[in-house]
Each structure stands twice: as C-alpha cells, then as structure tokens.
Image 1 (spheres, rainbow, N blue to C red):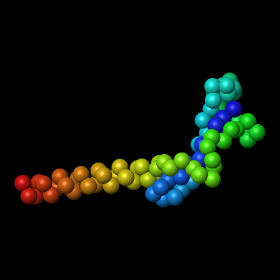
Image 2: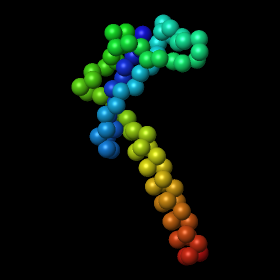
Image 3: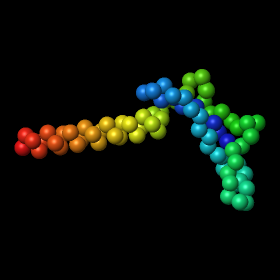
Image 4: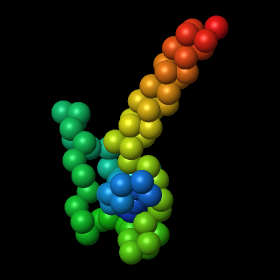
Length: 82
C-alpha cells in the first residue's frame, strides 16, 4: 500500500503527486525492480483539491543558481570597491 501526496509549487504553480511506500507494502520483485502499487492499493493523504505547498525541484534549482549568482556579483563589486 502506498500513500499519495499532492503538492503545488507556490512559485510556478506546478502540481504533482508523490508516492510514499508504507511499511506494510511488499518489498518488490527479487530482481530489484520496485513497481508502483496498483491504484486500488493507494491511499490519498490530505485533500487532492488543496495540495500542500512545496517548491518543485526546478524552482529550488533556479533559486540556488540565483543565490550563487548574487554572491558572485557581490564579491566582484567588493573587489572593485575595495
């Protein structure tokens, strides 16, 4: 059995679902593959119409790049002024 969590990015408004396997879930096939649970064995956590707000991976990466760029620009300005 899996839990399905609904998320929405407050920055770009992207919506996605993430599955979390519960401890009672079967361990998967012996060959190492980990198939998703069938829809009939999935339990929705929370209200899918009101998803949890969380930044998506794209926005997190973009924010990190912008922060790094700002630090580089600030360092260059300090070097010119100092």
